[in-house]
Length: 126
Image (cartoon, rainbow, N blue to C red; front, side, top):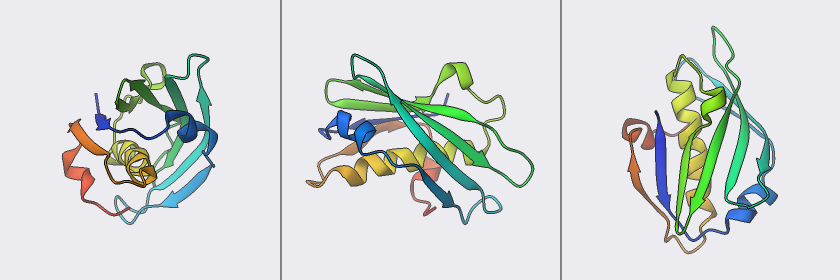
């Protein structure tokens, strides 16, 4: 399953409370459009779900991206219940976009990616 693990001291609550729906158009994969609609945080404040809709030239796949906070690490992955069967490069890039947003939120620049199986997408500019 695609995932990214980030070592970060970024305030996890702010990722949710500062979330604003965003729409991006990619220069890759035929100009995929990403619609990050809204976020939801659980009561214990250690999990965030982001409603994500990547619109590809052939179809639309609605899914959630799950952020999990454990000590100083944030895991970015697909939420298993809405895990798309067809994990296109647009689906994988949506995870990268959320991870880059977390990294950019660190004003001290101390956050970094610990592990991922999406390395080939990290250098791409959306």
